[in-house]
Image (tube, rainbow, N blue to C red):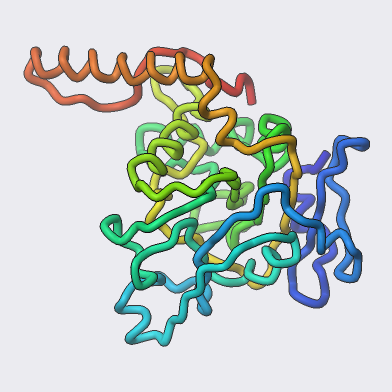
Length: 288
């Protein structure tokens, strides 16, 4: 399997600055492919759509201001092959379609993919020091092992394994998980993101560490990068199937009920509700 630094040690595809690796079930590992291999034309089991900017690392991307002042142009692109994804990897993206490509909640039109950001650095001052321990980091290998049954594409982010201020270099990557269906209700789509956030949490002492960046919601963008590594896992089905399994649904509803009960208790005591539900002590994905 990959080591934490393996993706930056790979030889980059000379034609576009991105290396591409496909998970090989026979070897239980990723196999890097070259730019002229037919594997790049491999069809995704579940094609999906993403909004793609013509700009990269544009802080105000997918807004009217950006279109007027930065000359931004946005297209809503269907991704049907690995190569089509690689072709847009250098550009900023968002996982939903919006009215006039203006990423506001009220402008949400549809999405058929869940998009996540893994920074291994929660940002909350209460748990920030815990992320200094490399043993807490979620690697591409670990994510792949835990979600091997589901189709996804991973792209390393621009700060992957790069020192950022006083924060030591660590794995940082973006995840695209097709749903196999189109969702036109923003609350329904956000519910799926919330389910994944809950599912992938880990209890550390009395605080939860959230492995998915909580800032990335269905209206957020992910920066592109001129140089990155792309990983594709075909899986057997979509993440949508897991999120609505009976056992998952039961545990998640229990979690929501716990939050509701805590809210009642806090209101009775005159306090406010903070933090996560204590309904399940361990991360649903087990040990890291």
